Image 1 (cartoon, one colour):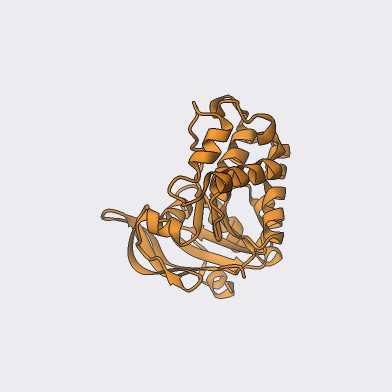
Image 2: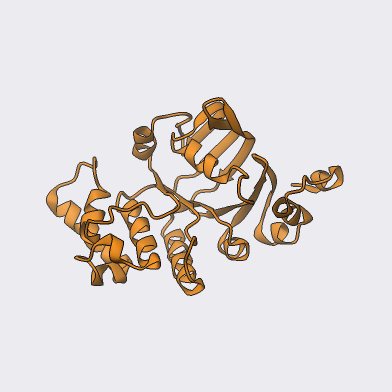
Length: 249
Protein backbone atom coordinates (compact mmCIF):
# COMPACT_ATOMS: atom_id res chain seq x y z
CA UNK A 1 0.00 0.00 0.00
CA UNK A 2 1.25 3.51 -0.80
CA UNK A 3 2.16 5.91 1.99
CA UNK A 4 0.87 9.48 2.27
CA UNK A 5 2.40 12.68 3.63
CA UNK A 6 0.61 15.10 5.96
CA UNK A 7 1.69 18.57 7.12
CA UNK A 8 -0.42 20.08 9.91
CA UNK A 9 -0.21 23.73 11.02
CA UNK A 10 3.54 23.84 10.46
CA UNK A 11 5.65 26.82 11.52
CA UNK A 12 9.31 26.49 10.51
CA UNK A 13 12.40 28.44 9.54
CA UNK A 14 16.06 28.88 10.38
CA UNK A 15 17.36 29.70 13.88
CA UNK A 16 15.28 32.74 14.88
CA UNK A 17 14.09 33.49 11.35
CA UNK A 18 10.54 32.17 10.84
CA UNK A 19 9.62 31.39 7.23
CA UNK A 20 6.56 29.12 7.27
CA UNK A 21 3.33 30.01 9.03
CA UNK A 22 0.58 27.49 9.81
CA UNK A 23 1.13 25.41 6.67
CA UNK A 24 -1.40 22.64 6.04
CA UNK A 25 -0.69 20.28 3.15
CA UNK A 26 -1.67 16.70 2.35
CA UNK A 27 -0.24 14.41 -0.32
CA UNK A 28 -2.56 11.45 -0.73
CA UNK A 29 -0.92 8.03 -1.15
CA UNK A 30 0.10 7.24 -4.72
CA UNK A 31 -0.52 10.76 -6.05
CA UNK A 32 1.51 13.74 -7.25
CA UNK A 33 1.07 17.09 -5.53
CA UNK A 34 2.64 20.23 -7.01
CA UNK A 35 3.63 23.15 -4.78
CA UNK A 36 3.84 26.47 -6.64
CA UNK A 37 4.83 29.97 -5.66
CA UNK A 38 7.27 32.78 -6.39
CA UNK A 39 10.89 32.86 -5.24
CA UNK A 40 11.08 33.38 -1.50
CA UNK A 41 7.60 32.00 -0.84
CA UNK A 42 8.95 29.26 1.45
CA UNK A 43 8.60 26.23 -0.82
CA UNK A 44 12.13 24.92 -0.38
CA UNK A 45 11.98 25.64 3.36
CA UNK A 46 8.92 23.39 3.56
CA UNK A 47 10.79 20.52 1.91
CA UNK A 48 13.76 21.11 4.19
CA UNK A 49 11.50 21.18 7.25
CA UNK A 50 10.01 17.82 6.26
CA UNK A 51 13.53 16.40 5.91
CA UNK A 52 14.87 17.69 9.22
CA UNK A 53 17.02 20.37 7.56
CA UNK A 54 15.07 23.41 8.83
CA UNK A 55 13.86 24.16 12.35
CA UNK A 56 10.26 23.31 13.17
CA UNK A 57 8.68 25.58 15.79
CA UNK A 58 5.16 24.20 15.80
CA UNK A 59 2.96 21.70 13.97
CA UNK A 60 3.27 18.10 12.76
CA UNK A 61 4.83 16.21 9.86
CA UNK A 62 3.54 12.67 9.35
CA UNK A 63 4.56 9.98 6.85
CA UNK A 64 1.97 7.23 6.85
CA UNK A 65 1.33 6.70 10.57
CA UNK A 66 4.80 7.85 11.66
CA UNK A 67 5.40 11.34 13.02
CA UNK A 68 8.75 12.73 11.90
CA UNK A 69 8.31 16.32 13.09
CA UNK A 70 11.70 17.89 13.66
CA UNK A 71 13.47 14.53 13.35
CA UNK A 72 17.09 14.29 12.23
CA UNK A 73 17.66 13.77 8.53
CA UNK A 74 18.72 10.15 9.05
CA UNK A 75 15.47 9.37 10.86
CA UNK A 76 13.46 10.98 8.06
CA UNK A 77 15.26 8.90 5.43
CA UNK A 78 14.66 5.75 7.49
CA UNK A 79 10.95 6.62 7.57
CA UNK A 80 10.92 6.39 3.78
CA UNK A 81 11.33 9.97 2.61
CA UNK A 82 13.55 10.58 -0.42
CA UNK A 83 14.62 14.15 -1.22
CA UNK A 84 16.02 15.34 -4.56
CA UNK A 85 17.28 18.89 -3.89
CA UNK A 86 17.64 21.60 -6.50
CA UNK A 87 20.96 21.86 -8.29
CA UNK A 88 21.58 18.13 -8.84
CA UNK A 89 23.94 17.53 -5.92
CA UNK A 90 26.00 14.63 -7.22
CA UNK A 91 29.48 13.25 -6.69
CA UNK A 92 30.70 14.87 -9.88
CA UNK A 93 34.11 13.18 -10.05
CA UNK A 94 32.58 9.73 -9.52
CA UNK A 95 31.08 7.55 -12.24
CA UNK A 96 27.36 7.14 -12.78
CA UNK A 97 27.50 3.65 -11.31
CA UNK A 98 29.46 4.86 -8.28
CA UNK A 99 26.87 7.60 -7.69
CA UNK A 100 24.13 4.99 -7.72
CA UNK A 101 26.06 2.80 -5.32
CA UNK A 102 26.71 5.75 -2.99
CA UNK A 103 22.96 6.43 -3.01
CA UNK A 104 22.55 3.20 -1.00
CA UNK A 105 24.95 4.31 1.74
CA UNK A 106 23.71 3.08 5.11
CA UNK A 107 21.19 0.64 3.61
CA UNK A 108 21.82 -2.94 4.74
CA UNK A 109 21.96 -4.90 1.51
CA UNK A 110 24.02 -7.77 0.19
CA UNK A 111 26.36 -7.19 -2.75
CA UNK A 112 23.88 -9.01 -4.98
CA UNK A 113 20.99 -6.85 -3.77
CA UNK A 114 22.97 -3.65 -4.39
CA UNK A 115 23.83 -4.82 -7.90
CA UNK A 116 20.18 -5.69 -8.58
CA UNK A 117 19.04 -2.20 -7.53
CA UNK A 118 21.62 -0.59 -9.80
CA UNK A 119 20.34 -2.71 -12.68
CA UNK A 120 16.75 -1.62 -11.95
CA UNK A 121 17.75 2.05 -12.04
CA UNK A 122 19.65 1.56 -15.31
CA UNK A 123 16.57 -0.13 -16.77
CA UNK A 124 14.39 2.76 -15.62
CA UNK A 125 16.83 5.36 -16.99
CA UNK A 126 18.45 3.84 -20.11
CA UNK A 127 20.68 6.89 -20.62
CA UNK A 128 22.40 6.06 -17.31
CA UNK A 129 23.01 2.52 -18.48
CA UNK A 130 24.74 3.89 -21.58
CA UNK A 131 27.01 6.11 -19.46
CA UNK A 132 27.68 3.87 -16.44
CA UNK A 133 31.42 4.57 -16.41
CA UNK A 134 31.21 8.29 -17.26
CA UNK A 135 31.94 10.84 -14.54
CA UNK A 136 28.72 12.47 -13.34
CA UNK A 137 30.18 15.94 -13.91
CA UNK A 138 30.52 15.20 -17.63
CA UNK A 139 26.83 14.42 -18.11
CA UNK A 140 24.40 16.94 -19.59
CA UNK A 141 22.04 18.78 -17.26
CA UNK A 142 19.17 16.47 -18.13
CA UNK A 143 21.29 13.36 -17.63
CA UNK A 144 22.45 14.69 -14.25
CA UNK A 145 18.83 15.25 -13.22
CA UNK A 146 18.00 11.66 -14.15
CA UNK A 147 20.99 10.47 -12.11
CA UNK A 148 20.01 12.61 -9.10
CA UNK A 149 16.51 11.12 -9.23
CA UNK A 150 17.83 7.58 -9.62
CA UNK A 151 20.26 8.09 -6.75
CA UNK A 152 17.29 8.73 -4.44
CA UNK A 153 14.94 6.14 -5.95
CA UNK A 154 17.54 3.41 -5.49
CA UNK A 155 16.79 3.57 -1.75
CA UNK A 156 13.15 2.69 -2.59
CA UNK A 157 11.53 5.58 -0.69
CA UNK A 158 7.84 5.66 0.15
CA UNK A 159 7.53 9.43 -0.39
CA UNK A 160 9.50 11.42 -2.97
CA UNK A 161 10.24 15.14 -2.58
CA UNK A 162 11.63 17.10 -5.53
CA UNK A 163 12.84 20.69 -5.52
CA UNK A 164 12.79 22.41 -8.93
CA UNK A 165 13.59 19.34 -11.08
CA UNK A 166 13.13 21.40 -14.27
CA UNK A 167 15.77 23.98 -13.25
CA UNK A 168 18.07 24.75 -16.15
CA UNK A 169 16.67 22.03 -18.41
CA UNK A 170 15.39 22.26 -21.97
CA UNK A 171 11.62 21.78 -22.35
CA UNK A 172 12.04 18.39 -24.02
CA UNK A 173 14.14 17.13 -21.13
CA UNK A 174 11.64 18.50 -18.62
CA UNK A 175 9.00 16.46 -20.43
CA UNK A 176 11.11 13.31 -20.01
CA UNK A 177 11.58 13.95 -16.28
CA UNK A 178 7.87 14.53 -15.78
CA UNK A 179 6.99 11.39 -17.75
CA UNK A 180 9.22 9.46 -15.36
CA UNK A 181 7.27 10.92 -12.43
CA UNK A 182 3.98 9.89 -14.05
CA UNK A 183 5.35 6.37 -14.46
CA UNK A 184 6.35 6.30 -10.80
CA UNK A 185 2.81 7.35 -9.87
CA UNK A 186 1.41 4.30 -11.66
CA UNK A 187 3.72 2.22 -9.45
CA UNK A 188 2.25 3.82 -6.31
CA UNK A 189 4.87 6.48 -5.54
CA UNK A 190 3.71 9.44 -3.44
CA UNK A 191 5.33 12.63 -4.75
CA UNK A 192 5.54 16.27 -3.67
CA UNK A 193 7.16 18.48 -6.29
CA UNK A 194 8.18 22.13 -5.92
CA UNK A 195 8.17 23.84 -9.31
CA UNK A 196 8.28 27.24 -10.99
CA UNK A 197 7.23 25.82 -14.35
CA UNK A 198 3.60 26.51 -13.47
CA UNK A 199 1.69 25.00 -16.39
CA UNK A 200 3.81 21.85 -16.52
CA UNK A 201 3.51 21.36 -12.76
CA UNK A 202 -0.28 21.81 -12.84
CA UNK A 203 -0.63 19.37 -15.74
CA UNK A 204 1.44 16.81 -13.84
CA UNK A 205 -0.40 17.01 -10.53
CA UNK A 206 -3.42 15.37 -8.96
CA UNK A 207 -3.60 18.30 -6.53
CA UNK A 208 -1.95 21.72 -6.45
CA UNK A 209 -0.99 24.05 -3.60
CA UNK A 210 0.12 27.67 -3.99
CA UNK A 211 2.34 29.34 -1.42
CA UNK A 212 3.08 33.04 -0.88
CA UNK A 213 4.73 34.76 2.08
CA UNK A 214 5.30 31.48 3.89
CA UNK A 215 1.63 30.43 3.87
CA UNK A 216 -0.67 28.38 1.65
CA UNK A 217 -2.96 30.82 -0.16
CA UNK A 218 -4.72 28.40 -2.51
CA UNK A 219 -5.15 24.68 -3.02
CA UNK A 220 -7.37 22.36 -4.97
CA UNK A 221 -7.65 20.25 -8.08
CA UNK A 222 -5.52 21.39 -11.04
CA UNK A 223 -8.26 23.10 -13.07
CA UNK A 224 -9.55 24.93 -10.00
CA UNK A 225 -6.09 26.33 -9.22
CA UNK A 226 -5.24 27.07 -12.84
CA UNK A 227 -8.25 29.38 -13.20
CA UNK A 228 -8.17 30.99 -9.76
CA UNK A 229 -7.16 34.67 -9.45
CA UNK A 230 -5.13 33.92 -6.30
CA UNK A 231 -2.61 32.02 -8.45
CA UNK A 232 -1.83 35.16 -10.43
CA UNK A 233 -1.80 37.27 -7.29
CA UNK A 234 0.77 35.00 -5.68
CA UNK A 235 3.21 35.37 -8.56
CA UNK A 236 2.66 39.11 -8.83
CA UNK A 237 3.72 39.42 -5.21
CA UNK A 238 0.41 40.82 -4.00
CA UNK A 239 -1.60 39.58 -1.07
CA UNK A 240 -5.03 38.23 -2.06
CA UNK A 241 -7.91 40.50 -1.13
CA UNK A 242 -10.41 39.55 1.53
CA UNK A 243 -12.88 38.57 -1.19
CA UNK A 244 -10.28 36.28 -2.82
CA UNK A 245 -9.39 34.71 0.51
CA UNK A 246 -13.06 33.91 1.06
CA UNK A 247 -13.03 32.06 -2.25
CA UNK A 248 -10.12 29.83 -1.26
CA UNK A 249 -11.06 26.18 -0.70
